[in-house]
Length: 140
Image 1: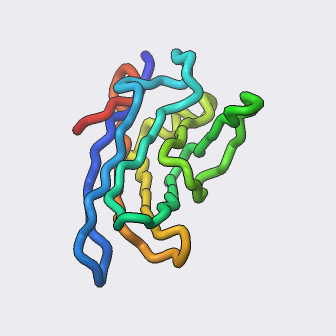
Image 2: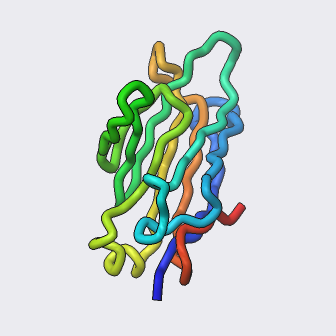
Image 3: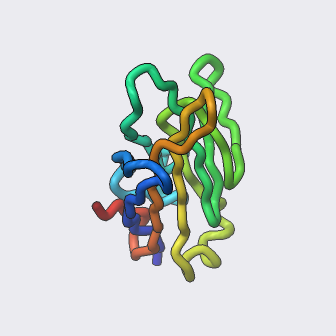
């Protein structure tokens, strides 16, 4: 039987500042690395930022890894379990050979939006991926 994940998003503000709105949109709504033609579960960060502030995103996962695909060459880069990016979109995936071990526990993914100039945290969201019987599912 194929196993998958369900995602639950939890929003949290940043200490010392009014909580800023941040969420992560997951695409596709169901993802299974063994049965999908997609490279991974697309995570798109949506965060409020003051006008004129360039935002950088920090991503961290308990398991699996983050990927990006270079638009110019199509090359796929494995960024590991922790990375920073100026792009709002990143892919998360896992090695199919690790699926049996990953199915036994939830996987936490953390995202922080920060000011790219001074690294001050603007907003944060935490997501937990849970396995179900068909694939990765986003529960909003």
